[in-house]
Image (tube, rainbow, N blue to C red):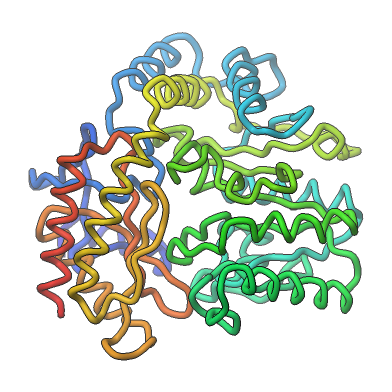
Length: 427
């Protein structure tokens, strides 16, 4: 056991998870690579849980943070804040939500917590619809709507949560149906559910479920849900903490795969916009955002330092068409991984969009999850010089592949080859 690991165990909670049998200390990074304390270089295909979205040590972000730190780091929302207003203007314009207002937080958990506050206050209801296999954060309210028991340590909640079918296309009672019939069945289930409960405040849904193993419904499912919800005045909250900012390649926001019925009422975001700095936020129509009838501020949300990072990062993202790069390079990576999977009876599915890819592992010849092999592949990939993540629903058996959006074709090939070797070595 390393000295740092021993010190970690002595002062940190037992439930604070660490990857790897011998936990890794990352000391610095550049581009798509990071280095450990012993000098080993790794290709990073997880980006601090999809947070280092653009690149490690991106000069444009580093310069913006350094210059802002030399002026003022923080003042709180009690004072006018130029970088916060400038970033809010850009985010509102990009959101697709009419008459949008933006509130900044420090994390995705806090963003979802705020969205739930807004929705329940606006609708005067504490009933919330959420998706099975979902994850929305670690606060008391967001744990209460998380549909993944591995990340929900208590059944206590200030909310009444009802779980809806549809977030996982290839498992569950409707998996055998084609996309059109699957969507119709999920809509019928939603209508039936709404007939047995008091009017909910909102449906909250990730367009692609992150912790759940990068699962998703057929395109258009949430648009069909939206039609049902709108008839009843129920709000739609799109949790874009992992899917936003072009990561899926095909769209800037994940909800745009379900855009037929218009944009969500509320969008939450975080992770990649700060490229590693702590930014989260909520976008909502003005009438919803302004519905609170008491004072509120944010001490650290929108602080000048993180807003400068977000502005520089968003500018770089747009000017260099990283959404297009995610689509092109991500498409190549998915096909490469599917070619590997075709030779491996323990790979049930390679799924995803852009640079958000899941590889689900099962025991060969069955549909039974194989979390032990997932853990072994994670170790083998690290030994080969590649960092990836893992997730999943009933059992953690999906590998999560989500590199920075500046990934090159050569780096995609390098990572795919290492993952291929890791899968082969663990059969």
